Amino acid sequence: MDSDATHRALDPERDPAALKALTHPLRLRLLGLLRLHGPATASELAARTGESSASTSYHLRVLAKYAFVAEAEHRDGRERRWKAVHAVTSASNAAMLATPAGRAMLVLGRRRQVEHLQQSMEQHEADIDAGRLGEEWHDAAGIDDLMPRLTPESLRELRDAITAKLGELTARDEADPRARQVVLVTAGLPLAGEGPAAPAADAVPAPAADVASAPPAETGPGPDADPTPDAGRAR
Image (cartoon, rainbow, N blue to C red; front, side, top):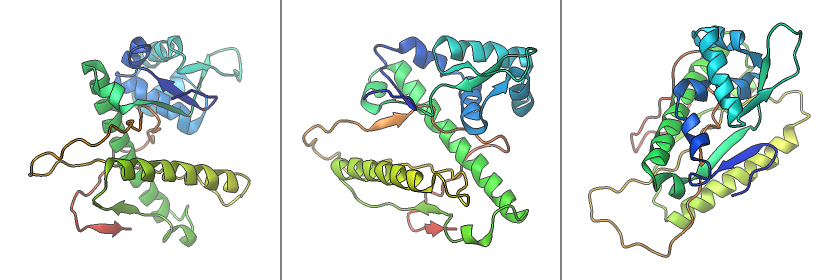
């Protein structure tokens, strides 16, 4: 898994200190806010999070030490501004689950993504109520709650297909003035059920885990996925 200008891939064996830096919930939130809203000062982020500017300043410096954030162009010389270096940070699920620290980071990242979904849902509902989103978005938006039976290979293929299609549509809509930021949280979580575990097939490389890609919205707390098997598509 390679890094590029927008995506940073972490290796738990080579980058343990960087991964550990992301285990602090406030650092994950600060990184997400910078990705969502763009460059900001420690004071601006303190106002968004309810923390002190001394606290946000300290945690921003830690993120900068491990190259998750960097100094942005200053509006004036009074206070340092920060920006996210990458849009997405990820790591191999298999590699993360191989160590206690990696497992803890993976769990924390997923919990934060769930919180982000809840925050985004609340913001979306507020935007609908306030008329900030037109009716053309009503049928397009929604939450899927499906429980198909898939093999590891099919689940990996599905996730890869979603990623590829998202890239295609994002490029197509880049210059369209009607485009809006859309929160897209995908999850593919196999459940063992009550029966005996199935015999292992040929090993399939684990898909990448988004460690800190979900930028938390600034209002409200986290996601609310209904686990009911027959919930279907809820809008």
